[in-house]
Image (cartoon, rainbow, N blue to C red; front, top):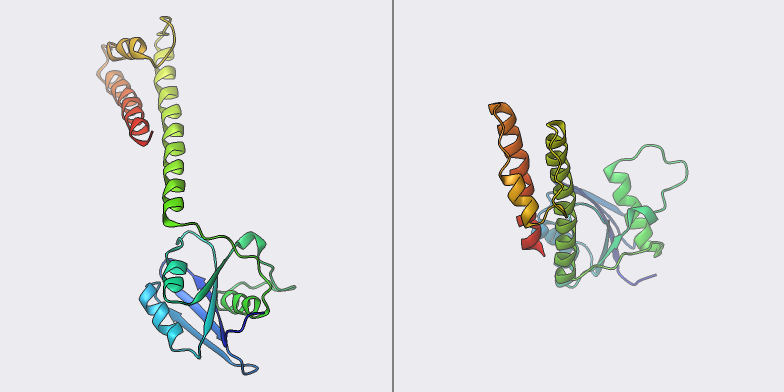
Length: 202
């Protein structure tokens, strides 16, 4: 167990943060609903009997809050939701209960915290995700072009696909039907744009 006087659980959402603080006095609970602005959360915690420790679940709101609290000298633990033990028999899940549960786990030191990556590591992860997204987009775009041409009886037979010679052949395709030409142009443009995105990310 740690020596902080106050243990704070945060249930963090995009538009609100439900907080529950447990003090050293038995049965002492302080609850509040705040905006997710870091300054407001930090200001509320600073009004509690200190020192305070904070815990919240990792989620889509990112890690800006833990960095802001840590920079202010407040111990903040980020807990993996998959490793968060729920109270037995609890069927109704509410923000207030989640915040209280986190505060209790923090008080008892019964949690598994995740390692908070550095901003540079997080940026690298975002880059990898973006590269994987564009790879998937490019694969789908190429598939659409190939299938559209196949439906017109057109199949490339000049060697490896998606190389300069293949692109020259694709760019030269013309159709009498205006609607078909528009559909093809749109599909092929998606390939070219996706390849450009991939090159920039690489």
